[in-house]
Each structure stands twice: as C-alpha cells, then as structure tokens.
Length: 370
Ligand code: F6R
Image (cartoon, rainbow, N blue to C red; front, side, top):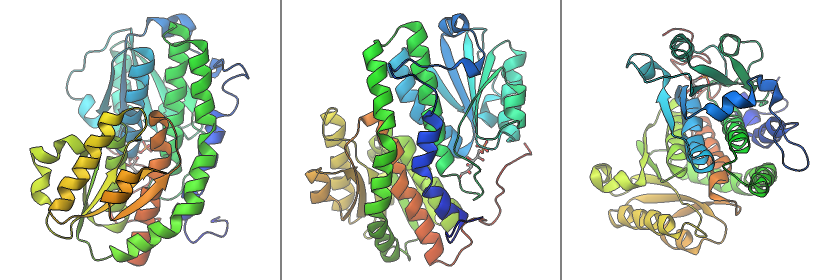
C-alpha cells in the first residue's frame, strides 16, 4: 500500500523522520543512559572489544562508513568498514575481541551472510544491525540490534539508511558508556542531538523538495554527475551517487573531495554537474573552507555546482549555482539530513525520465546469491 504516494520510494523517503525516531525509541532513559539489554551480549564482553569491523554491501556499507567517524571519535577503537564480498576472501585479522557488525536491511544478503559466518568461525562475535525481524542474518548472529524503519519495498534503499546510521550510533554510544570513553553528559547531549533530527529531516522535506525538483528538471539531460564530500560527507556523496545511478541510470561517481586534484578533476568540463556536500562552517572551519575551495576549483572549469549546505552558510550561497539547505546540526548528525535531498533528487530524475522508480532494471531488493 503506497498510502497515496506515487511510488513506494516517494513514500519511504517521507518516512525518513519516523525511521529515525522509531529506531531511537525505548533505547535510553530520561537521564541519557543507554539500555541495549535486547542485544544479549554481556557488558563485560563489550568492554573487552578492541576493534570493530563492519561488513555490509551497497547503501548499508555507506551507513557503516558514516558510523566509523562517530564510533572512532567516541570509543577510541579502530573501526574498519569492509564490503562483505571483499572481507570474506582476504583472510581478515579476527580475534575474540573483535566485534563484527553486519549491517543489512533485508537480512538476506548472501555476501553479508557469508562474511559473518566466516567471522564466527574465526571466533569473533557478530552483531547484526537489521531491519527484518527473524531474517537469516540476525538468526545467524550472536546478537541483533533492529532498525525500526518499517518495511522497505522500493528496491533503492532510503529510510533504512538513516535507521542504520542511528542504530550504529546507538551501538557506539553504548560502547562509550560501558568503556567510559565519554562523560555521561556528553552521551546525554548526543542522544538529545539524535532526538532533534526527525524534525530537521522533516524541515528538509517540507522546504527543499520544490527546489530539488526544479533542479532535477534543469539537469535532465546531464549524462553524468560527480558527487563529492569530506569526513562524514564522503559516504553521503557515495550514497547520493549510488541512488542516482541505480534508479535514474545516470553515470555517477562519488568520491572524497580531497581526491579531486589527484585525478577526478580531469573529468570536469563546462556544464558537468558536481554535487558537493558542504560541512558546517561552525566548528571544523578547516574542512568547510577546503570544501568551499573544491567548489571554486570545479566552477572555474565550468562545472554546474549543486551544494548541500547549512542554512546561513553564505560561502556556499556565493559559490554554488544551487544550494539545498539543511538546518544547523552537529557534524556527526549531518548525514541524516544531507542524504534526504539526494534521495529526492534521484527520485525526481527517475520520475522525469519516466522510469519505474520502485523497480529499477537489473536489480533485486535482496541479493540472495553470492
Ligand atoms: C541501494 C541498495 C543496495 C543495498 C545492498 C545491501 O539502494 O538497496 O545497495 O543496500 O544490496 O542490502 P541489504 O541491506 O538488504 O543487505
């Protein structure tokens, strides 16, 4: 049931705010103390964990990459993110103190399942972050933290991506709590920041959709798109690129903004659309000014630049041709809002091209073969 929406993808993007709030629900008390008893791994075991390896594919792997920035910062243990199909065949270093986190919306992705089986054979614990109750991946894991995005029908993953980030963040905060790497207050504040995100996502849906649609209409003949970002904006750029290629069949590439001068800038010719995720101008100023200079560099070569930037960021307004705005939020929270206009952009492009947005060619909702 599409509930009045033209497509499942449209409906599911509009469920982004609920996906975040439902995944947070019931997992902390009013003092900001996290309660992940549902996970059934002893706090002592969590205390011993000295490395995390996230295994996942596609969109789920980008959620893992976002979480890497947060968990390493909060817990001070290394977090590796590996495509499940690569992990399995490279003899990864796994010990009983390694926590392998398998992220999967469907819970049936064969590549991810094979990776977690391998990790368990080597004696590591596996925690699944999954959206589908009773599916194979959580059944075969030591523990599961469910995302509560609700059923996702459209082949392109949207609301599940946000829920995966939230669940991985909850895991990171829980680890920080048991290991004592963050003050209680800091954990409390971070949970408050997470709780504030659904209304910020709603703001993007309410105020930016029209601009996104107009921009898609202007870009309808573009043959390729580049997406770039830094820090947590980097996985968001890759996710935006993946959405557009899978449902609008446009050639896209997402990459780290710092790589531009190491190769990709050669692709920029007059009219080339470049989407740039701009970090907040507050706080990490260095990153902000570096990303702004990336916009200047591609613009100087004639690119058509679309920025995703914070409200009030005048540099983005000055240098980019179009700016999709996000409300102010801490850097680590920004992926939850920045991905939303990119999801809408892919949807609009595909619709304007008359494509079946829910069932793109050659793709299946869950990939149950290796
Ligand atoms: C992209 C997409 C895929 C999946 C990937 C993993 O929109 O849907 O990249 O994210 O196939 O699927 P799950 O999360 O079900 O393991």
